[in-house]
Image 1 (cartoon, rainbow, N blue to C red):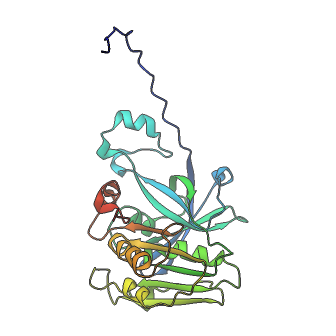
Image 2 (image 1 turned 90 degrees about the vertical axis):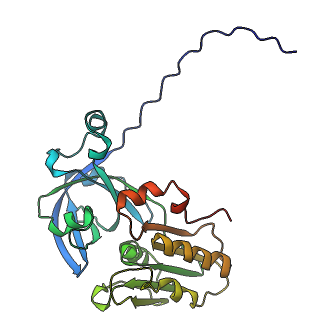
Length: 289
């Protein structure tokens, strides 16, 4: 029988301080309308030299946006703001891929899908003026086309075009594969640099995205995928990513490990809802079964 003995009073373990993330501040140099619903914002400034860029083609930054009525100055002191503001008034983060790094002019290009006043980042990009400041965390990264891959399967909707465009530019000239890009109509197609062995296919919904109008999953169902080392990059709307994951892994027999397959957004959800749901079953594109 174990005898219970008194123990010394527990000593409180101090919490580790929150790691301070580096926030970069740049300014708008110029903007360019690439398509009816896509705007490029070119950013530059002294802090470009301090940015730690990655090797991957899919390099992303987390842009920060605050309610203009609060009159906050960039870069935001996030630690101080957490003590001063309710959670609902804290600056929000929006993740975007760096479309291109212009080393000569020390600038980055960021392409935004815009739908009028919908969202936070899109309206900012549509109305951005030279000299406007913007701050962000990053870049982070997670994907680059492997030069030794035998075949590439790449697909996405408008939200994935910047990352896919950067990936295509990062491929060897002899790369082989298929790229499927779904957009509203032909006016939304943008020029891309594509290796000769890559089959680029633009498909058109004929209108705004809806679960009924999207065609990307059905198109991928019919593509030919050869045996060998196949690398996959597919990003877009969450429910379509779930369907495509099932299609490629369960039906086509590709290995899930090594795929870059994830959701950039979710139909019928505002960004904050979408981000919160990432921690719930509905936000998981990789079910246990």
